[in-house]
Image 1: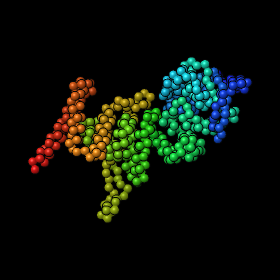
Image 2: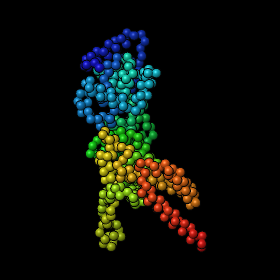
Image 3: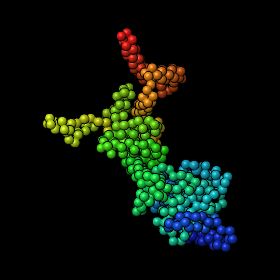
Image 4: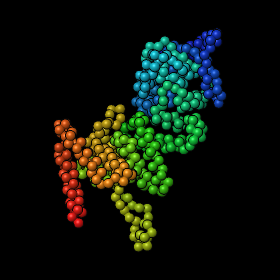
Length: 443
């Protein structure tokens, strides 16, 4: 890396001089100040460009990075440039990009300022360095390009996906918020994103989702990386839709309870279809029906029960002179906070572990089972299935357990006591059903 800005500027000026004297001139069209502008494309050695610490593709990673303050205080130092390069090398598809550049060479140029700061092409520069390439092709911006111009250009180039790698979901959300903070409107942002239909609503939903992610992050005593939400885009959109429906119907309390119930399930790794079944009463049902043999999980839920008092009596209560009523509810937000702040649930870098602490693992298993039951019930209702078909499905499930029992019972984490407990519950249910069937047939 060249040591100072003067050296970088001089290298770019010399490349432009050579470009001016070259008969064959390559250009790149860029949206600059509202007009399509042809910029000269030159080839620079890999030590000239500076990686951009304000790169929106890395917003989420840099927010959580332990060296963030150091990076922003002196982003051009060799040490901090090396940190940026290592972060880029850890992004999705980096290895695929290296292979592409090795096989096909560089197809599209990056974009650079006269001072050597890369506006587009940061990941490509890191990949070209990794494969030992000799240079990088870049389009050079006008000398008077301002910070505002750079943001507009980045929005136009990156958000319309005219680059090799897509943004992660959370980086996209952070960049959208950053763009609006520059004084732009939701309509302008929607146009930049290419959202011609319902553009404003799409922008508003994504900003609500980002606010929700920040709300969840605020519950953690240590940093909770944005990246854990990158694979949860559909989960969060479905959650937002349900929340808005309940809120617009005036059911604010149920909206909040549903929100935190789904957030808990998402953080525990429950899949998208299962999460969509979750409502405000979901975990109360899980506690009563699926955690009867899990005292630690029940204890966590019991600790989260709060006494709520209605704001005012209803009409009948007023006529009878009754005071406002109180009832006990499960505050799932408390459970989310407990889960996030248990060290056993988190890795050293803050990521939630797949193997959760035992009470939360039991809670997750109960949630998946309850959600699957809801899905099965809905499927049966939709096809008007006879009770005999339901029993046939259950029988097939039991047959599957029988076939795998010998193998499963030898596993280290097999809980024989819990298995016998659930088996007894099944036997009791079958006995009760047999009595009902017998009494019906005798009439």
